[in-house]
Length: 517
Image (cartoon, rainbow, N blue to C red; front, side, top):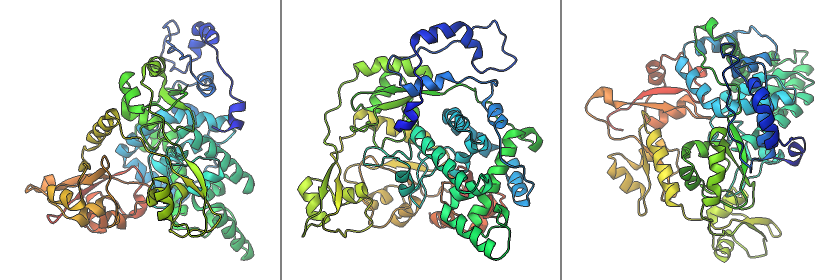
């Protein structure tokens, strides 16, 4: 979190918590049905809780259900456009999708809504990560956008999101939300307070929207969002958010059910002074490793960044136990962190990699290089040494992969000595299929511990030839059809979908594989 954000965070002392335990407990968000004389329990506050953690506990509101507070903070214009109606029809026929994305939002929604409210932004924007990423902190797109807010690398850097081999702030829910709030405020100022243009610019880029406005102005046409000649994706993006906000505000009107989310902070932050093994800490504190990983998705490995940020998000209910566990954790061996190198005449990526004991691919990744071409005087970040995965991390990855296998094919963990040929042979499929299912190039390198989606050879029973595919950000119907070697028309038919504009990140698609796959 940047220094500006830190400056206005107020620490909450243990004494204050004790004083509030009688009167303040009743101000914790609850439904009208809760009797006033039933004692409310405030989880123990860890001594290493950060200022952010204190801030998260500080806010109280009038609603027991977080959705009620979100809808109370709505501020976008009411629109009855046909494109909005189209998405309303889609949502009203997809209860399972709504269940899944709202469930995924639970750990993060309170924090996101609170940040938007404190910055005076309309709370419909708390639903934007559903449209962007289905609230998946590990969501990625072909344009290399990451996280719940889907920042591309350069925009992330523009808003102070650190990106290195250890940590990517675009996946950090707290850091990326702070960046998204600042970005949205800047866009809204740029477009004179017009929120529909602001949201369109968040999707298409400010330059694209400004050029469209100028083009229409010269032609004497309207310059509101609905009049602009924007891409089909952006023309669908804004109505999708508007439709979703209507659904959240009145699910019964659309014959849908919306599961309540308690209007309490889900996580707090705990300071860590040195790098720690996340998986081992989760195991010792009896926290689900997947949950800890999802809350701390900014870390690229199962270890915290040696150079900071030195804090972890942990569920409030587990914070006290987790803090006690930190003192018992064995110290992680010191790791060599990144350094800088100025390119000299005659240098190549290969020679630099050899000199510093790293690889060409690691150098390219650490410096976002698209080619091997270097310039004399260019500054390069030299990536540090990556620690070997601990047994705890390996076990955690395996458990997470096993849970994710349900109805989505099989995830295979690459072992030392594996090749695409041996994996394809083991699973009775082809190398091309494995490359296609995992969006890999033919020259992709395999790493032990990496997970590959492998759809096993089709059984004899046709009904067993079915898989469920979760749509990712950046997916298109053509790409999905090509991935599984089926037709776009078949996918639409199997899922009773009218056309491609009705598919969304996080949605499940039923796909029947052909025998050759």
